[in-house]
Every structure is written in C-alpha cells, then in structure tokens.
Amino acid sequence: MHPIDIAIFIVYFLAMLGIGFFFFRQNKNADDYYVGGRDMGSMHIGLSVVATDVGGGFSIGLGGLGFMMGLSGSWMLFTGLIGAWLSAVFLIPKVNRLSKQINLLTFPQLFEYLFNPKVALLAGFISAIGYIGFTSSQLLAGAKLASATFTALSLTQALIIMGIIAVVYTVAGGLKAVIYTDTVQWIILMAGLVFIGIPMGYYAVGGYESIKATVQPEMLSLTNVAWSQLVNWGVTIIPIWFVGMTLYQRIYACRDEKTARRAWYIAGLFEYPIMAFMGVLLGLFARVGADQGMFVGLGYTDPAQMDAEMGLPLLLRTVLPAGLTGLMLSAYFSAIMSTADSCLMAASGNVVTDILERFMPIKGHEKKILRYSQVATFAIGAIALLIAMSMQNVLELMLLSYAFMVSGLFVPVLGGMYWKRSTPTAAFWSMLLGGGTTLGLILAGYQLPYGLDSNIAGISISALSFLLLSYLTPAPEDPASARLSAGRA
Image 1 (spheres, rainbow, N blue to C red):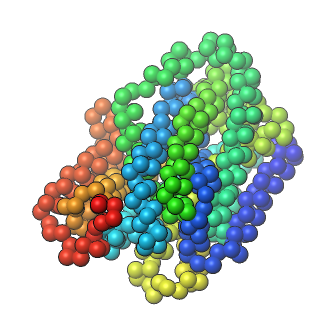
Image 2 (cartoon, rainbow, N blue to C red; image 1 turned 45 degrees about the horizontal axis):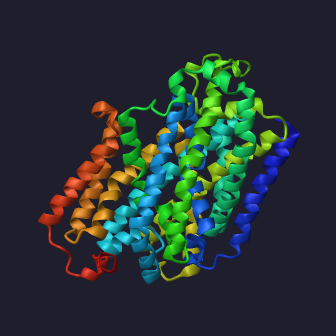
C-alpha cells in the first residue's frame, strides 16, 4: 500500500480516537455515557441510526449480495426502510415520552416497567448476547477489508487491530462520542462511495456495455430473488427496529418526540434506496471484475470459489490509485466502526444497567457506574473479538444475532405496549421459548421448508406462548409496573 494511503489511514484513526478522548472529559454520569445527555438533534441521530444499522457489516454484506445476486440484493435494505418508518409511527411516540418520565437508559428497563424485574433481567441477557455477536460481525467485516488490502496482514492480525481501535474510543467517549463519530464516519462513507468507489469501479470494469456482456441477465434485474428470501429478510430485519438496544438509546438521546421521528424518517431514506443500491452496485462491479480476470494476479482465479464478501475489498484494492485507496478504505472502515462502537455501547448498557446493578450495590453511585460501564465495554470488546476469530461470514453472523434477539424480544415488547391482557409470566416464557427455538434450530442445522429462516419458527412459538399464557396466568397486582398506561390510553 502506498505511503500516502497509509498516512490518510493513520490520520483518520487518530481523529476517531481524538473524538473519543474529547468526550471522555465530558461524561459526568451514566446519562451522559449511555444516552448523550438526552438533548441531541435529528440530523446527528438520523445519521447515527443509519450508520449503526447499515454500517460496515451490511456494507460488506451488501457487496457480497451484489457479487452473488446482482441488483436484487438491494431488497434486503428495503426492509430497513419499512422497519424505520413503522417504528417512527408506532414505537417512538410511546417510548420517547416514557424515557423522559422515568429516565430510561436501556431497552430492557422498558420491560421492567411493562412487566417486572425478572422479565427485564432476561431481556438484558438476550440483548447483551445478541449485541456481542453483532459487534463480532462488525470486527470481522473490518478485518476482511483490512486483510484484503494490506497483504502483509493476516485476518487474525487485522481483527486485533480493528478491535483495539474500536474498543478504545468507545470505552473513552460513550454514546455522545459514538454519535458524533457516526456523523463524521457516515459523511466520509457517502462521499467515498459517490465520488470515488462507484465511478472508479464502473470505469474499471468497462461501463454498462461491458457489465451487460459479462454477467448473467438476471444479475441486472430486481426480480432475481426468491419469495422465501424476501420473507426471511423481512421477518429478521423489520422487527429489529422494535427491539434494537442501539435504537432505543438513540430514541432516549433525542430532545423530544418530533426530533426522534424525524431522525427515523431520515434514516429510512438513507437505507433505501441510497445505501441499498450503492452497496450492491459495488458488489456487482466486483463480480464483473472477477469474471474478467481482474483478481487473478491476487490468487483468485475462479469467481465461483471466491468468498463473495471479499469481492468488494479486492475491487477497491485493484482499481483505486494511491491516495484514493486510503480515502475509500477510510470510508468503509468508518461504516464498520460506526456499527461496532454502537453495538459495544448497547451490550455494555445491558450488562451494567440491566444485569450488574441488580446484583451489585452500585446503583446511585454515578462515578462508580461510569467506571464499571467503561470496564464492561472493554471486556465485551475482548469477547466479541474472540467470537469474530471463530467465524467466517459477516452477513451470516449479523443475521444470526438479529434472529436471536428478534425471536425472543419482538412479541413481548409489542404485547406489553398494546395488549392489556399481557402478563409477566407470558412475557418471560415467550422470550425463552422464542429465542430458544431459533437458537436450537440453528445449532441443530435444521432447515424449515421452502428455505425459510429459523427465526420464523421462533417468532411463531413466542407469539403462541405469549397469547396462551396471557390468558392462563393472572395479571400483576401492581398495574403501575406492568402497564404502559400513557401509551395505551
């Protein structure tokens, strides 16, 4: 790699660390660390939401879909637009008002208000496990990009470097540092894709006529996708907008309901069509380049045998000149970091606020909680790094983490907010049975008919058990802790 590119890369990482340490001095308590002081604007939040949701994993994952499927891979992020706008209409009006009333810091705390502490504790474990896996997927995405670009780096070495940088500035700065770095990182990514990646990739593969002559016609169609795949994406991705801890933290961080809803509408539009087509186009260009023999000199002679998610990094490495390579790689690392840091914050919030505070005498000691939060963030980053070292596919790891959280948490949170008959017992067992069903099917390697995702079975079991047990078990004696009365009125 050219020294100019290395210099650009170093400056970028130093800037991210600088933002983290700047906010290290600004954080006075858990409110500052986890919800940014509850007074942030819609543009910063909106860009942070889309940066977190799309991020590096989906950026690299979309490139892999474009490499395998062509333009039809863009439908995956259409589900992101639907999820963002549905949650803006149905979730934010309830949750934002409640967060101001009782100072919510995490998503599982909502379960304590809706049901009871036992349900909230289980939700904390499910959310923490899911976000540790999601953090791992982002570190793996960054490592794939780095190892494909820096030939001297192995995947393991790249993982260690990515992990250290992401963990250090997140530990130091908290959510406000995460949101401001997300804004910077997303601007870098968008500029890199629009002005560097797509034009240079398009030119390098020979333009439209060359693309059309190289790939199969279905790669240029929006119908090259099975109905079961669309269902799988929808069932896995749309509900995450209702159960994602990173998203709840940003709802809490908004200054008011109007700000939060505006931020979610902005995020939805950036997801689809903007990022959806940018990601798959670059993956498509990589497939054309692979079919043309562009990567033979790098040891990739058969496109069918390539890791599809390596296509995009190899394309960038091959077609970009000195200077632009550093800028474009910084753009993709920006996307990866913006999701990794948010997921670290989410998992840390779950571990400290939803789990440790229930067993340790730290509640009310703001400085102690802040230090525990930073230690927890560091430890979770280390665990995520170890998981990433044992996985190979970014998108698979991301969707597995999504599926586990969605199948356990989606039905109880909707039931708790919208159904008066819901009970703590129903919520608890629907979490266990829903998440357990999905995880069990995945670990057993059992495939549902028509190629449907295990998550569909998990959500179905969760919904069925929630409905049955809500009728069979008594409602709690204290309605204040079990009913979102203001939202249900």
